[in-house]
Image (cartoon, rainbow, N blue to C red; front, side, top):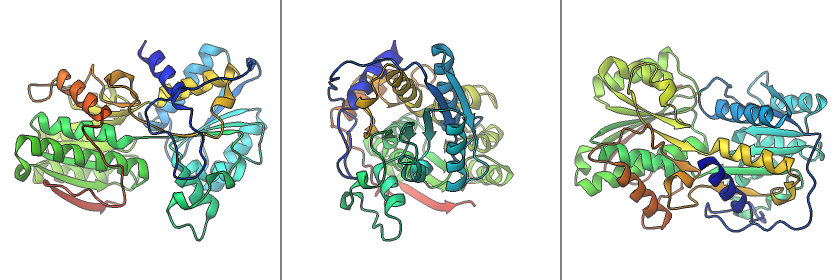
Length: 400
């Protein structure tokens, strides 16, 4: 039922067309009107291509892959997955070429790195529908403009750089679920927090800066600003390894970090391996990662900062099959809070597995979401600099 409600809300969000790079839906759901009759698509063939991640990352790529695969199986549609040979635009474009050669006419592409593909190949394959997750207008402008781009997307017209007839893009307001996680952690009594990002890409930064803002807000409410600290670093990759685990060992065992928000696909493995040695905790990302993180130790995960990847995939594929692509083509949506009801949003914490306690109950969480939706609690999406805080935040850059 929850997925159906989210799907309906997503269909409502798709009402605003992009005119300039700086525009887009704000996460509140306007009404979409469907004009004319539609014809169900009967020859649909779906492909998914990964960016630098992998379909076993237990996070962004895997959630997208599993959602595509499950939808295709339940709808009797052919589905294939492609992994580029290298982490380069040319390799991602080559995977698109191969998918099209294999007959794909719908291609799902998760990750901002596919902006270059949108620019290079949407015109090349006008009969293919591209669904680009986590690709913003600014990402497209950067690749489309090239040298001379001033990183101010409002100064450019995004429609000049790709085919709006066959592309749908969306981003997520990750700063909001990051805020929820940081706020909840401090309210639950954790005073020494850590943020371990994957690569310092926009989505990771939004999660991280939201996390810092949430921790700061909770500390202020409790009057313990001088007692709360956040260690902040990115691993430089979206998977854990011995070097990153050793770094986390230092955080947990020597610095006294109590909980780490592991924000970068499979990088959670390094945080989890280190946490179990000291009784520390971990926060997951993108999807409810408690099921995989808790394999390291029972109750290791206090919560996960999630975004609605599965809902987006299910909605778009369903709408394409129903012949409603015209409602989505050319849109670049920014999905976030669409309701004061926690479960109906594209960014949220998992209610069933979050370790609520006296300091942060389920009712407290629901009240927080309502306050955020109503605008009483404001979270900045600015990632040009670390947010100003009353708590201590130590930014160590990147491990690699």
